[in-house]
Image (cartoon, rainbow, N blue to C red):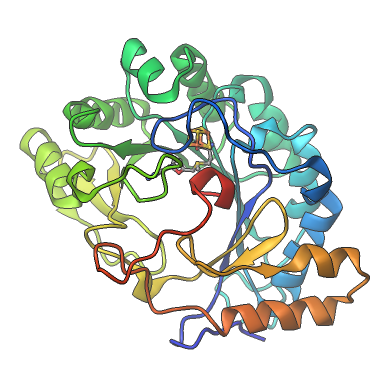
Length: 339
Ligand code: SAM
Ligand code: SF4
């Protein structure tokens, strides 16, 4: 059965945050100190995560799962979770284009330790990797992440390519006055490596709560900066994917922009989210959550959990309203929800 929200959008994609912890402290995401971590006993076990995933795939034909966090590679024995999820098959009678095939399993990581586990993750069945990289400058990397890890992240990108992930993508958050002067350098980096860079507009999910519109470097500005150096052609509509994509006219690959703030793509959204502590959310910016952990731990059967997921999706809103007076910041920040 399809999982359809009140606005007629079919849910296909589940984002699972597997931890709220992180080895970085990106300024746009976390404060330097003082984050309150979830108590360990509140974090879902791999068995619990896999159970929710299997209900979403088996009952509702969800066909894509992305692991995120916090930093997902902080969880011990991550390949074991990947193995548990990689075997999930989209039911043959689902309306998904992947019906009868394995789910599309991906991860978003800061890449700091990827060089150590990329091959293991690949062998466990992980298909795709997005690695976050906002700057190629060592000092700026330290300022933005509060960690001196640029070399390791660059090694992680190479390790992901060598391990055969396809595609490997780079996520780069652009903040005005912080790293907007590196847009072309990052695009060049992607072209040279043969991987897609996806620039992300800065969103109001920073833990410090200091976001304001003036810090957002818009999709229009990003594309203008790149196309001055590398002429671009817009690719056909993106469907439910969050990035608009352009092709380099000289044939050297593609580049994407995720315009959450200036050009919301809520109308095509097919995503739902599970936080590390088992709260089901229908939007990154949702202000309400549905507690699946309690159900998982109180002996609820799969049908009951599926019914709760359906009830949650029945409350999904049309869009996030950033920029309007009616916008309310979610109680939790990006690393706590799972970006
Ligand atoms: N730790 C992993 C990482 O950094 O890739 C995964 C979790 S992180 C929350 C997921 C993505 O959200 C990253 O690409 C990160 O750059 C992005 N992100 C975090 N805070 C953001 C914000 N306030 N606005 C836009 N993107 C943000
Ligand atoms: Fe950690 Fe990712 Fe947030 Fe940076 S963006 S602090 S790497 S969770």
